[in-house]
Length: 503
Image (tube, rainbow, N blue to C red; front, side, top):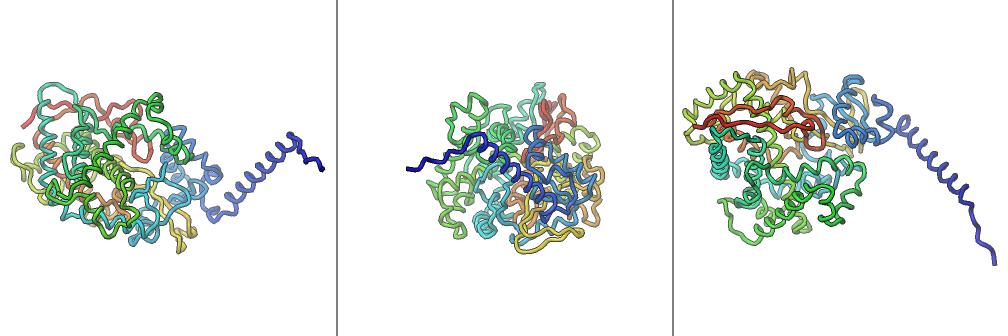
C-alpha cells in the first residue's frame, strides 16, 4: 500500500503566495497596458484596483465624485476612474451615451448599486426594462397626473395647515421634514390609492422613509465593494442588528409598512382616489411578465417608488426654500409673480398648468432641482453591439461611460442659485443640457409627478407665509457626499425656519 503524498505546509504556503502574486502582477499589467481602456488618461492607481475608489467612497464617505472632478481638471474631459469604467465630462456627448431606444443599456458586469434590487430602475436587460416600464407608464403619464391634481392640492393644503399652526410661536421647523412628509404622502396615495403613509408621520419628524434611509448610505459603498454584505445582513435578526444601529428599526418598520400596503391594495379593485393606482395597473397589465406578478416584486417596486418619490422632490424643495429665503431679491421677485395668479395667500391654488406658465417660478424650481443633486451618483451605460468613439478614444463594446451633471460651460457659476438663467435661455441651451431626470428610455418615469408637486407646493409656501431662516447657512444645503443619494456635511441640522406669520 502506497503512502499518501504529504506536501510540507511551509512550501505549500509559499506556492500559494507565489501564485497569488503572479495573479496580481498579471492583472496589473493587463489593466495598465493591455486593457482596451489602457490608452484613456487618468491616475495610475485607479485602473489597478477598485480599492482606490473604495478608499474615497467607503473610508472617506462618498468623496470619490469630487476626486473624479480633480481628474477631469488634470487629464481632460475623459478619464479612467476604475478598472472597467470611464467617466466623460462633456455635456455634448450626453445624448450619445443616454440615447433613446433602450438598446445601449444591458446588464453590467460591475454593479453600480450596493445591492441588486430587481426593481424597474435597476433592471439591466433592455427588453425586460421596457416591459416593466410599460406596465406603469399610464399612471405616470401627464394626463393621469392631472387627474390626481385635486388629491395633490389637498395634501399640500393639509401640510400648509400644519405649518400655519406654528405661525408666531417661535417654533423651529425642519423644512425638509415638512417636504418629505408631503412628498411621501403624495407618492403613497398614488401607489396605494389612499392616505396610506399618514400614520407614519409624527410632528416635526421626517418621513419614515427618510429616517430609514439615513442608515443605507453608510452601507452603500461597502455593499458595492462587498456584495455579500447585504445578503449577510438579511440573515441576521433585526433585534441583533438594532444593537449596532437603532435606526435599522426604522428601516424594518418601513419595509413592513410597504408590504402591508401592497397586501391591502391588491385585495380590492376599487380605486380609492378616483383613478387606478400604480399597483392595480401593474397587476392588470399585459406588459408585465407573469413571473413579475408576485408579491416580492411588487414590494421591491413599491419601496423604490416611495424612496424615489419622497427624497428627490423633497430635496429640491428644501434646497430652493433655503436659497429663496437667503436671497431677499429672489423672494420679492417670486412673490410679485405669484400675485398675478394668487392675489392673496388665501386664494385657492390655480391649476398646475397655470403655474407652469410663470417664468420666474419655473426658474426657481429648476434651480432647486439642479442644485439639490438628489441622485448625484454615476449612471452606467453599456454599448454591447457597437463601438463608441469619443475624441479618438475607442470605447469598446461592454465598456461603460459616466457623465457628471454640472458643466460650467452650460451653467456659468454652477453653484449659484440663479432663476434668471432659465428666463434668459433664449437659445434653449440650458434646457437642452438640463439632465436631472436623465433621458432616453431610462429617463425618470416620475418627472410629471415631481413637477405636479413642485409648482403648487412652492406657490403655496411663498404666497401664504412669512418665513425666516433659523441658524441655517449655505453649508446646510451643500453637497458633501455621494452615497447614491446626496448627503449634507456632517453635523448639519438641515434647513430650519421659523414661521413669522401666515395669510
